[in-house]
Image 1 (tube, one colour):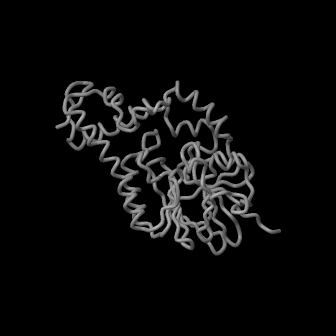
Image 2 (tube, rainbow, N blue to C red):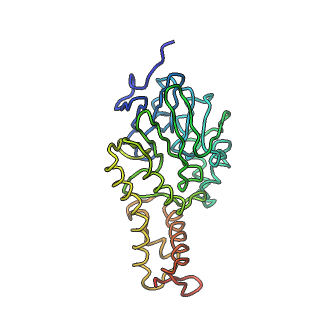
Image 3 (cartoon, rainbow, N blue to C red):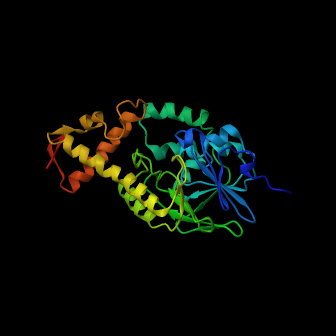
Length: 304
């Protein structure tokens, strides 16, 4: 039987040898994203089936689904392929087996979680997966003449991974997205320190093309990628420097959250205050530990 390929029915698909980049609606801006197909002699794997794929449907052959991590925007297209085997890192598998498991990864306040549960079910078509297999760091997925090498890059989630396809000189980085927003490490299963380590790991990946889930397009050229990766990581330092400047006089956690060091003032979503509070707490804890902040009262802190 002749196999069906994505480029036959997918606008703006970009072929990089055995890798096909399927650009999401709005250039991959949340809630959409950029998925990839990796095609070998024996099978084809779809990586991070986006909301765009869920909306458009599947017009090409897929044998397995591979996830960089388990978050609501990386799985909607699975609804089009309910019986296809799914692979993810063992640390994130809980998010595929039940909605409660997925919610535990976020750690949202009860009043936000209730609304978000409904959104995940209705807008992102969440359903527990029946055929989940897991892998660990260093695993290789063989497709027949083409391989996908797993590189564990935790921080965004515990099981977040990048994938290297050596035959295409292409790396897929998931939500290490190289955007001006910077790293996102504000969920219950996130870690700032792990994210920083993962940025170093990504800088060592030997590839010519780098694809991210929420970036506008493929980054080609190692020098350009390294510059963008450095700028992306520098947002962490900018957040802390801005906090230290703000905290030249004693400030509380709530005052720091209201000041906003993550989101722009115009952004108004149900998550903003929760994320700003989490971010402020993460950075206050770190800067207390390394001496850049001191505790002035039970609830206030000041830069040293």
